[in-house]
Length: 453
Image (cartoon, rainbow, N blue to C red):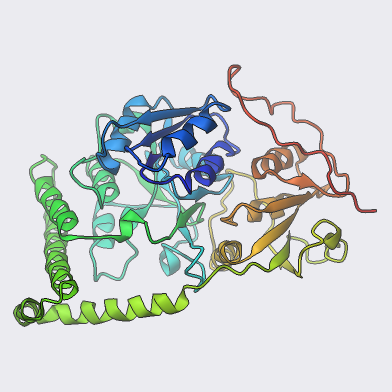
C-alpha cells in the first residue's frame, strides 16, 4: 500500500485489508513523505496489529518508488496492490486466491467498483458491459488495446492485481512514471509470458475524489509516459509484428494526448493566440476539448452533499424472510426502511463471478453507502457478503440463518464488525485463532447488544 497524503482515507483502507477473511497476511504501508501525519495513522494501527509494517520514505519518490520499496520487503506467496484511499470486499483475497490457484494464474485481478461521497450520479464498474461471465485470461495485445484511447474498451491498466511473488522475479516499477506506472508494470509482466486472469466480480472498491492522482494528467506526466513507452522497445522483448503495431498506435495516441494537454494549458493561461495556433495546427483537438468542458459542467451538476437522513437497509436472499417490521428496535433513529434481495451465498472456490444482474446491485449498494447514513441488517451469509460492497463503514447487525455454515458466518461477521441480532450467539470457531502466535489482533465483541422478542 503506497500512500501520499492519505491520512483521511488510510483508516478505512487499512481496516478493509486487515479484516480480510484470509487473515494470514502482512500489510506493508510505504508512506511517501506525506506532510499530513499519515505515518502516525499507520503507526497507531501497527501498535495493535503485528501484521502491519510501516516504511517511511525520506523524500517523495512517487508511487513506483513506494511500491518498489514494499516489494523488497514482501514475504508472502502472493502480493496484492492496494491504494491507500480504496476499500476491499472482506472476502476479496480468499476468493481471488481460490480462483488463481484453480486457474494456475501468475496474476489475477477483479473489476473495480467506483464510489464517491460527492458524485452521486450512480455507481459503476470499470469493466461495465466488457465484463464476462467467468474469469478469463488477458493477453498482452488485449491489454495494450484496452489502454489505447479511442478503442472503446475499459482501460485495464487501472486494475489492482494480485501477483504470485515467484513469477515477479526482479520485475520492478519504473520510478520515473508517476501516472500509468501500473499499466507499464503489468504490461512488462505480460510481455515476459506470464498468465494473467481477470475476474468480473468487483471486489475492489475504487474511491473517486478530487485528489485522485490517476485522474490528473499534465504535460510532465504525459512526457514521462511517452519516454517510458519509447524505452519499452529497447528492453529486449520478443515483440511480434502485431504487438509492435499496437505499441506504435498507443505511442501516437500518447503524443496526441500531450498536444491536447498543451492546448488545455494555453486555455487555462487565457493565451488565446497560442490556443488558436494549436487548434489550427491540429483541428482534431476541438472534439476532446468540447467533450471535456461538457463533462466538467455535468460533474458540477451531479456533485451534492451527502444526504444525512438515516436509512435502514435489510439485506437478505430470502424474499419471504421476516424482519423488516421488527428491525426498527435496532435502529430507532432510521427514517426509512428498505429491503434489498441479494443472491444466495456461494462458497469461495465456486464459479461466482459477477453477472449482468449482480453488478448493478453491487454498484447500487456502494451508491447507497455514499449517499446515506446507513444502518445495515445482514441476514445470513448472503447478507454479510452483500454488506461488504457498501463502501462506507456503517453500523451493521447480523441476523443469523440457521442453514448457513456458522463458522464461516462468524468470521465474516467479525470482519465487518457486526453485532448479532435476536440473541443469535454463534459458537467460537475452532480455527479462528490468529495465524501467528505473536500477532496482536483486536477482536470484535459479538455479544448480542440488541434483543428482540
